[in-house]
Image (cartoon, rainbow, N blue to C red; front, side, top):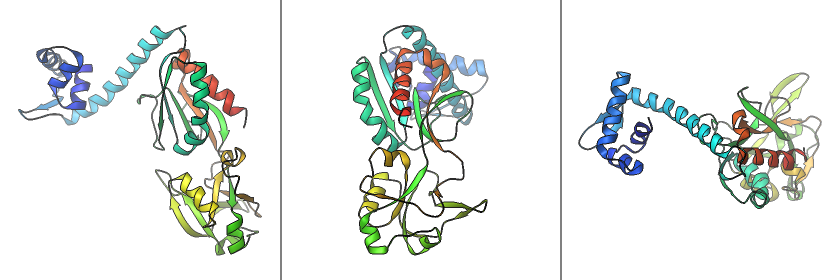
Length: 294
C-alpha cells in the first residue's frame, strides 16, 4: 500500500524504489500483487508515464487515511510517556495564526526544545483525520463529535473606524445611516463576509457602499487606519491592541458577519492523539495561554 501510494504521488516506479531503497522489481511485484488481490487495475503504465486509474485515485484516498492511522499508532507507541519531541504539525487560519499563535511559539519551543514546530497558515478547510495535522485552530461552529474542540477565543465582531475617516465622512449613529458610508469587506476562501443585522427578529443585509474587498486582514486594517472605510474586525484583534489606532463604533443595532450565534475559535485535535506527549503539551499550552484571555 505504501509503494502504491508513493507511485501514485510521483508517477514513477524508479523514484519509489529509490525512496524505499528496494529494487524496482520489488515495487512492481508488490503493486501487481495488490492489483491481483483487489481484482482491479490501479495504474495505467506506458513506456513514458505511470498514472492512476479512476478507481486507483479513489483507492489512494482511502490508502492515505489507513496509512495515516498506522503512522499515528506507531507514533503513539514510540512516544508514549516520553519527553515531548518530534514534529508538531499545526494548521491555523492566516490572520489568527499570525497575530495570536505565532507570538506564543518561541515560549512553546523554550518549554519543549525537542519539539519542531511546523506551522501551516491557511484559510482552507483541513481534515485532521486525513491531513497531516496534529492541531488545527479554526473559527466557526463546533465540528463533528469525532474531534475534541477546545474553545479558546470568541470570534464576534465590532465596527471600527479611524479618526481620519470620521473627520472626512462623519460618524454614523444608526444602521440606517450606513447607506451613506464606505465599508471594507473581508473575503474568505468561500465567500465575502457581508454585513448583516437582526432587527425585529429578522435578519437583513446592511446597506453600505463597498470600498474594498480583500482576503488580507493586514490590508483591511491598513485601509481602515488610513480612513478609506469602516471595517468589522474580530473582538480578539481589538482586545489585544491589534487595531488600537481604530475606534469602536456603537450603533443602534449590532453588526454581524454570520447569523450563527456565539461564534468561537476552537483548538481541534483527535482524542487518541492527546496521549502523544508533543500533542498533549501543545494543547495544554495553547489552551492555558489563549482561553485565559477569553
